[in-house]
Length: 386
Image (cartoon, rainbow, N blue to C red; front, top):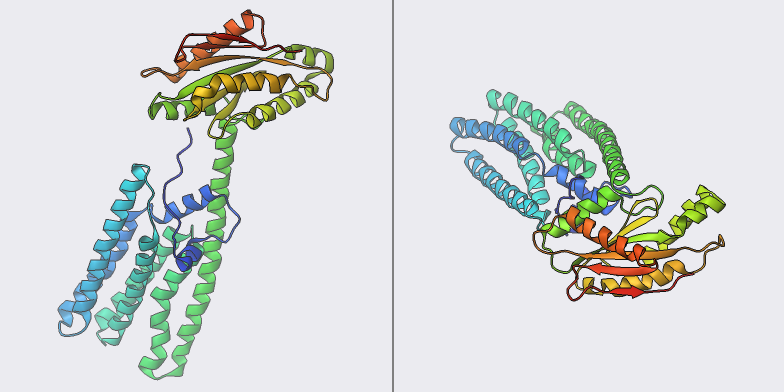
């Protein structure tokens, strides 16, 4: 069964939404999955934050009267906030509720800015311990940013700039020596190199997601008609029945006279007819209902929601729609069996009940619909077909 799409929401703020946008024409589902990648590793978030907090604690111990205590307090508070945001989002996604991401994305940028500021302050302190340890820690954080945020290259690059460039831009002013402008140039070259790296990683990851999506589609969809196949139908039915059996019916459809099409015109004509029948079925069901092809000339419709009670009415309309003339010159009819879900029923049992109703409809003369277990007396309706 394919993994459900996480319920993260794309940021509402336009600048943040732009930062996490991969700048590619992708389905909304894949955009959400890319965004979810940014939220998927709280352990690396904690490790990077703790590494910088250790440097800040060291700075406070060695320079208690400077700005380091305030920096430490702000950074620790930001880490706590980020952990709370991650926990809330994780619980929301696990419960299937929408999970806002604006604060998560904004807080990651704020933290990157604090890393850049802390590195600059440590270097300007003149303390050789801090001057060595702070840049080393910052470089380790950069590696974590690249490996954790490549799903959103713009976001990753912004964090890299906030962490790395402040130190390299500060050096010429701190030392009053223009030769240190070389560091600023190297910083820009590093940003360009990281852009190439993150874009390539992003492209590879998107290809993997697209391949997974296609594999899932092939596993759950009929190759000929594009409708859900048996696997996809049973997944949809099981998910729907877990939410309750009220207002849920299954329509089992079988074409009458389809064998003559294959025998007289060949399987290519039969396949073309099945595609057209699938189109008529899809066009004839209410929004929210799910059509599937089980194989051969058998189709199933999952009728759920407020209009499920109209299953028999819709089935009668489908019988009329399917029997309308086709360009190939040979007509087919349709028989329908309807099964109704009841509490405690399994998806397999509901499918078997609809199949049994279809069998009775076929035995009664075809071109009919038969209901089983419906709310009310069972009934058969005769609908003529040519």
